[in-house]
Length: 252
Image (cartoon, rainbow, N blue to C red):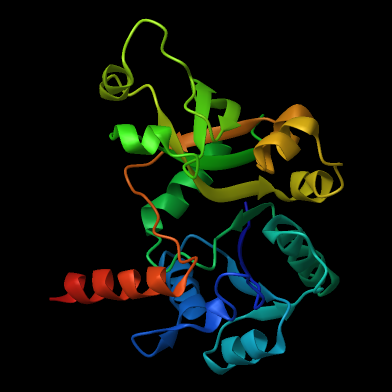
């Protein structure tokens, strides 16, 4: 089973333009992510997929594999699909594609290993991660996406506090490990990736603003593995400063 890691990297961002090139301890953030994926030794290839020549040239300068994708793609999933097509045109074939977020420089190798492990089931189309919610504030936070599962099979994703616990308080529900945060790293079988980018938006997806609901509504099986780790994403310059503090404190 050949596995490709794709790191989508857009230059344009309403909250943080040029984010992939933001410097963390003398290295661009996208290179931090690339190096973490390479050092994990989990992938046959790691590739940065970008729509901007500045990101592409920087990636090449650091010795990273990179491809140029169209600027009008809607999301990272579509960028992954185009990256696969570019590599296939060169004769490269991959069975699994892992979408590694380019704005999470502290991603753990174990998280990438966890998401790959979901393909030990033949009926798995897509794999993602979840982490137990241990604080009421997280359960209530609409920016924290919750996932509801039957075993390891995703039933629903929501920004709301789901499932609703009728016979207990929210604090009690949290203590019982009822709520799980969705961790947004995805892995797809290559043929599934090519299919899902052709799907039309659905009502639930548009209501919650969650792309993965489109896949569920169209009958795709999403396996959800549980991780002990959380991600720290960079959406703003303030987030970047927090990441720098975490890295520097870790090194002390």
